[in-house]
Amino acid sequence: MGMIKEFMDFVRKQNVVAVALGLIIGFAAKTLIDALVADLISPIYSPYLGFGPEASLTIGLSVFKIGHFIEALISFIVILLVAFIIGKSMGKKL
Image (tube, one colour):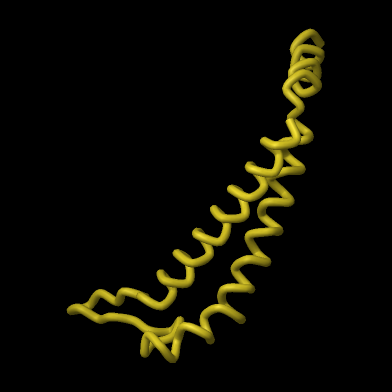
């Protein structure tokens, strides 16, 4: 019984619930950003680069999905930008 009480104290002190909610919201935001990149940003850059999200490079038996990698890279950059903006805005309020 002492171990359960100790665990519950840990959850309350470390604010684990807030962290879990933050992760859930972060995963939801990632899904939205991935959709933004795939449906809005990729169609804009595809004609200029000459290839789209389905583009791949085949060397021997290996297939490298270059278009998919570029989409993932753009999503990563957008997520970093959003995190930076949120961090800067919270830094000013604290």
